[in-house]
Structures are given as structure tokens and as C-alpha cells.
Length: 237
Length: 224
Image (tube, rainbow over all chains, first blue to last red):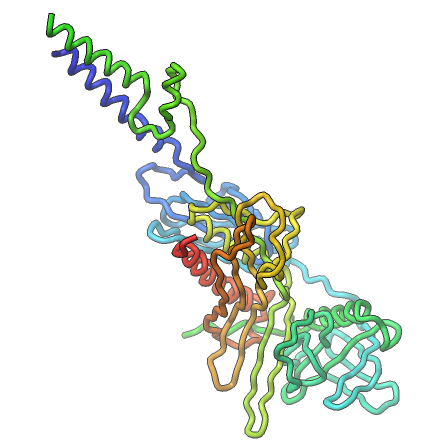
């Protein structure tokens, strides 16, 4: 009878083995310092992809990244991307729910084109349009119509909006149109008035592929100049 | 003599159990024993259907839909703001795949570069599904993402999208959903564009963090 007991014990041991194996095979992205320490999920994202992620002085991957077994508590996060300033912050990983971090990386150097730049443009009016030259400087936009019928000077700091838009002016009904942005005009707004332009290379009859490249370039330059003047939202009390 | 026989029988039975392996092991088939092999062999587990997720973005730029109410007429305008250093499609795909990964009923993967999937056609329920290495296709069409600004209503970030899960072999629709997801837009559009468009990008990230788990949960609840 004693031998039966021994064999039963052997069987029980054999049956319990897989449980141990499964526990040992559990996947882990980053082993916690202590097995008994609670762990949490950490998601790290950046606006620009493929930024290097360093967590507690150890490189753990590139964004976007999900780490499933990070020890709960405070950690030091460092994000590195060429052409952008390094971003460092302290994060608190929660064991109860996933922690998500989204970082907008700051470009280390804003490349500006040589200024002033002059574009051949069609200036859109509410009714009709005129043709002329738009000169972009670091401080302002200067428009001069070919037939001297229109002329204006708009300081960059006075702009309230810079975008691409349909139609000559605000108020043009635009819902339901599902055409690409490429065909849109360059639109700037000051307090009380908006201006629309379509840039072209040689003539106003340029194909859309050519005109859209010039209009996009004009938008890009003015947008970069304008974004330098912007201030973020005030912190709430 | 009787006692010895009983002990021998029990011993033989136990040895057979031990040789056959642990009771808890699920990867043993009765067929293995018939071949007289003492080592357990793996039997193919019923495969989970592979599902390829194909995302189509109609417009890559941030859209501003603006409504201004006036006494005699209303002004409506759609503007586009290109986002620098930000790939909305990649951000959406990453967030969505991360949310879908919790659904173990299907094996999820993204569309590869050599797979041609006409998402707009699939979303309309027209055409036959393309030949891809998957049993199902989840077609995702994102019409627009951006901000809705109106004088007489609360400003919102929004994403407008369509989802359609289809069986690749038959082209049958298994599940579909059209969403217009919104979250509060707290601030001015110009302020949101400061610091490399930080406010706009953070707002879009917040709405993706709301939308993707919501859609993944609906797929989990669906009987597909």
C-alpha cells in the first residue's frame, strides 16, 4: 500500500508540472525589477514616428511602442529623434489601468526659405479675381495687381488664420465637396477680412498639378512664418 | 497473491498515465497513442481566422469645418491645415491594431505594401474582395478628421469613419459601422497651432484613444 501512495504522489507531481511551465513562459516586454512587484501597461507615442525610447537609462524601442510589463511607479522617459529636441519627462505607471503618453516633438531647427519670395498669383475676390504678384517677407505679405487695381500690405503678426480653402472667400458654400486639398486656394484671414490666392508658375492656365505645387509652397512658407508668432493656450487656473 | 496482483495492476495503470504525460496537457491526441509513441505530438489547433485591416484615408490634412451664424445669412467654410511631422493614418492604424489585439477570436494584421485592397469599393459593398492571405478583411475608410467650430454650438474635434468586416471568400458582410466620433475642442484654433501644432495633434490623439477601443469593443461584442 505504501508503494501505491508513492506512485500517487508521483502522478500528482506530474499533473501539476504544466502549471509551472505556463507561468515560466509568460511573455514579457520588460521584466520588472521584482517578480512580486505590480506591473502596468505603458504606451508611448510621438507625433513623428520612429523616435528612440529610453526608459530609466535603458533603450526599450522606438515609437509607437507598447510595453506590457513595466513596474508600477515613477519612471524617467527620454525620447530622441534626429532633427528634434530631446524630450525628457517623468511618468507614473499605474498597475490598474494602461498609461498612455503622447509627445509632440519640437523641431530643433526650423528651416526657413530665403526671403523675400515673390509668387505669381490669382487673387480671388468675392466676385471675380485679379492677377498679380505676392511678395512674402519675414514681416509681411505685399500684393500688387498687374493693372494696379489692387494693392495691400498684410503684416504676418496680424494674421488670425492661415489655411487651404475652397472658394474665393469665406461664405462660399463648401459642404459635400470631396475633392483633394491640392485644388484648394491659399487662404489667410485678418481680423475682419479674408484673402484667397491661387499661385501659378507661368500662366493662370497652368495645370492643376503645377499650380497646386506652387500654392502649397506659398502656404507652407507663410504658415511657418505665422506659426512663429503663435502662442499656446494660457494655462488654466 | 491477490494483493500482489492488485498492486501490479495499479502500478501498470499509473506508469501508463505517467508515460502518456500530464493530464492537463491539451496538445495530446488519442491518435498519438495508437502509433505506440511515448512522446506526445502536437495536433494542429483549430486556426483562428486571419483578418487583414486595410485603412484608407480620404484626406490627410486636418479639416476645420466652420459655421458662422448671421441674421440674414450663415457662413459655412471648410479649411484644411496640413499637419507637420504627423501621419494620421499611421497613428490611427497603430491605435486601432493595439485595441484589436485584445480580440483573440481573430488574428489581426495590417495590409502589406504589395497587397492591393480597394477600400472605397469594399465599403460600398461592391466588387469582389481581393486575393490576400487572410480569411477576412476589415475595411476602414476615414473620410475626415479635424475640428467643427460653430458660433451657437460647442466646438468639437471629430473623426468621421466607416468600418466594414467582410468574408474574403464570399464577400459577405459580417459587421459594419459608420461613426462620427466627437470630443470637446477646448481652446482657440490659432492657439492650438502653436508649438508645432501641439494642441491639434494632442486633440486628435485623444479622439483616437476614445474611438479605437470603442470600435474594437463593438467588434468583440458582434457575433462574427
